[in-house]
Length: 156
Image (cartoon, rainbow, N blue to C red):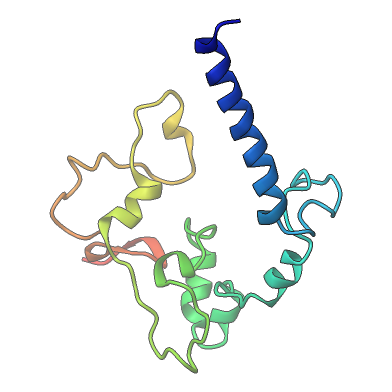
């Protein structure tokens, strides 16, 4: 073979060798030793304990019932029953001890994540009411007219 073919070939082989050699130093020893499972062995065994030690930020609706029983009951009876409180109020870690108030997201964009009408076949067969954003009271927040805990209630 001619040198114009062999030189790039040797460079490619050298790069592959360099990558395989550097992988020996970069990849941790416990990577992939947990067997083939849903992660196909692509995780560190020591990472399991790291995730167990990681603090839970989202506590679920059960943590809200203690102080906000009326809102939770209203939410459980509404069409928003599948929407967790923390989707709008943010993670409740440390509430009410460290954080007295949770930030409340009342933006129109948050509501449109589920309620925007999509022009796809069968997209309007869902359980949630779909709206056309360009035509439905475009310049106002949804919470001005709708109570998120009971969306069928008219707040006007």
